[in-house]
Length: 77
Ligand SMILES: [Zn+2]
Image (cartoon, rainbow, N blue to C red; front, side, top):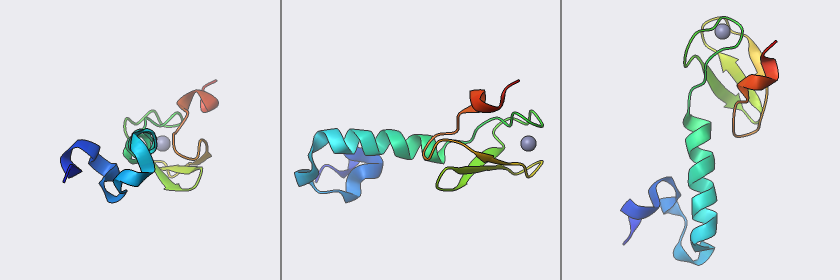
């Protein structure tokens, strides 16, 4: 069926509706995305380790930020 079209939300069946799939795809994208570290300035080094916790793989600093999205501006001086 239309697994290509729904991307990461393909595991949801059609009964969940298009809106939920869109939201899920958006969240999934920002969860998987790597972010720039505001401490050591390394690009794409911060990744999500658990719910609302993000870690820089270079300087190993842990950040508490959005559950599904790293907000770099929270840590800018
Ligand atoms: Zn860092």
